[in-house]
Image (cartoon, rainbow, N blue to C red; front, side, top):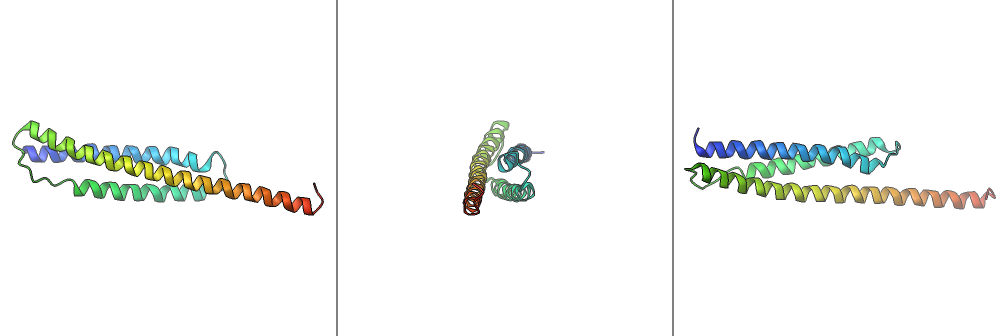
Length: 134
């Protein structure tokens, strides 16, 4: 196996491993953020989280594929490490951007849910006042 193939193999192994780890971390902790310990809406939160993770995988594996090809001649081990590290660095930047985009999406969903909950409470309070319960 030549140096280019070694660089490709290292790049793919590192990038796929990191992508899977980040996705699992986002899934586990993002679901907690969405549900906030409440069981109501857990199914919707689970579905939303799953869809976000699928999109995360698609974008990141697509970026990994786009960045795989190199036009550089890799004749030494040092050159292979340099090319692989550059490509891994680019994927880490993409992963980081996706991570923050998903966190922003989760935070927005949670904020909307909290606002809906407050509006329901206020509406219920007004209804109870009109009925003379309060």
